Length: 275
Image (cartoon, rainbow, N blue to C red):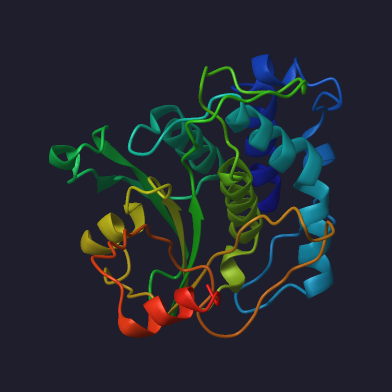
């Protein structure tokens, strides 16, 4: 899809489906012309093999930051959904991808744990692809579910769902990945391979990533060779990316330790006042 058609799709989405929500945003100006979202000079359509510069990509991201990414995030923030019940969120993702002309499949991450008390049918995951449809394949992943938390803020876009809140930033992750989809679509001809965008449900304790892996999200053709994801981190300044080598923040779990008796060493230590 040419860059100008992408711009038109973005504008239609921002002033159409999200118009009712956007009216409540006191700090967001109304979206006007499509070029106000993403100027064609900033994000031109590229010929096959002509990779855009980093500066061009950064400028494009800045151009759509407020009126598209932030506005979309605030729309999602008002309608948080818990794991395996992300029906509205999945719909927003699909309608955005459709407006951008990005092909996708849905029905990912069905809940196979309902017999163990995990509620919700699941199947709200979405997987989009851009590029040649052939290797090499790189995946970018965002989680989409919210938490069972009552939001007590005074922002105009606060949660409208009682007892539910995007307190972990997944609304931001989802919006940023959709922003990446818009930029990648405009530069699709320059991709020498495939980029797979994974919108994963049930991250908050539902093993949604495991479900999608079992359903083949990494092994379907073309198989994923590298995968990337990140998390919003309010303790870092805006515009700063933090990271480290090796395993980091990969999982959490709970366990119980039952002490049945004291050993000699522990008993002696307590007796000597060392405990």
